[in-house]
Image 1 (tube, rainbow, N blue to C red):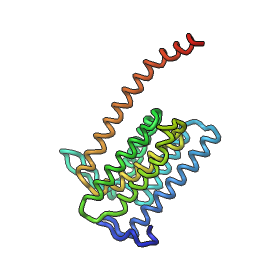
Image 2: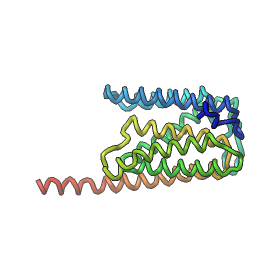
Image 3: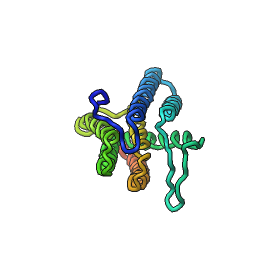
Image 4: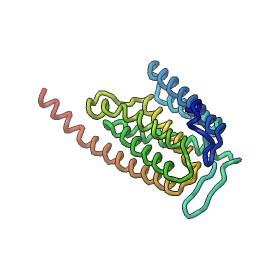
Length: 226
C-alpha cells in the first residue's frame, strides 16, 4: 500500500512517520508471535509469554508508537514527549488490553466480537474526523477483517480459540492501534474505550462467576449419567 502511494502525509503523521509506525508494528508483532509460539511448543510457563509481550511493547516504543499526551478528565493534560512515564504507561496499557482479550477468549467468539466491534468504532471515528486520515482507518479495517475471518470457526463450527499465543497477538495489535489512534486526541475516542473496557471486565467477571457456579452441577450430572 505504501508502494502504490495509497498512504501520504496524514493530519498528524508525515509519510516517513507512517512508514516507521508500520515497520514497528510489523516487527513487534512478528517477534511476539514467534516467541509466544516457541514458548507454546516448549510448554514453557505462562510468565515467559508476558515477558515477550513486554519486550514487544518496548519495540513499539522504540519505533515511536507511544503516548504523547495523557488526557485526564477534569484534570487536564500531561505532556509525555520527554517523560520517562511514557514507556511504563505503554506497557501497562498493552498488558491491560491483552489481558481483557485473553479473558474473553474463554467464551466462544467473545474475543473476536469485541475486537471487531471496537475496531469498527475506531475505523468510523478516524474516518469521520474530516481530516483526511487514511492509515488508522485502514489499520483497523484490516484488523477487523482478519478477526472476522476466524469468527465462523469459533462460533459456528466451535473448533478454535485463539489460545495463549493467538490472543496475545490479537490483543497486542489492537492495543498498538489504539495508541496510534489516541495520538489523534479525539475526545470521543478517549472516553469510549475506557468505558468499553470497564463494561467488558464487569461482564467477564459475572460470566466467570456463573461458570464457576454451574460447573459443579454439570460435573455431577456427568457422573450420574456414567
